[in-house]
Length: 134
Image 1 (spheres, rainbow, N blue to C red):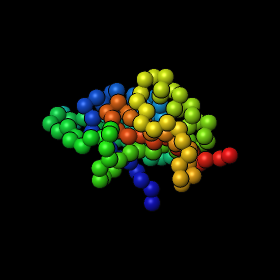
Image 2 (cartoon, one colour):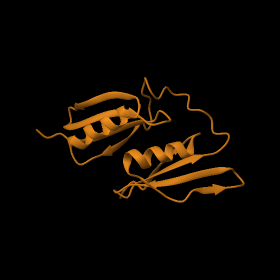
Image 3 (cartoon, helix red, strand yellow):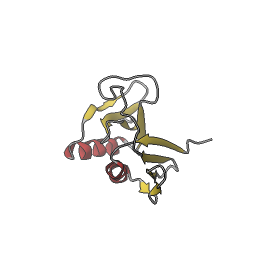
Image 4 (cartoon, rainbow, N blue to C red):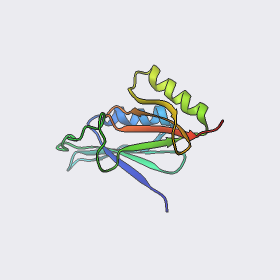
């Protein structure tokens, strides 16, 4: 069994789609639009086969959780695995250069990964990681 996709509500559909395409090599599908509900979405596919559904529709309320400073029960982040520690560092440098907020700089985790945490344009937490190697 595999995770087919994860869905995210947004108020900035194109910007969020472009972020995952540019920084995580996502391949966007054709934009879907339902005129009765004013629902719009993109599926962004990744090399692993997993997809991210980015959705927008009027009337979806703001998330009341503090998604940046605190963590709450429920899904808390998306994690992108890369080939090696060098690729983690490259992605970190690219996001810093482009002005994205970094929550935790690259570091070795207790469970054997080299990773950093950042935020996407909607303040969703993103991890980029690789297996730590000496």
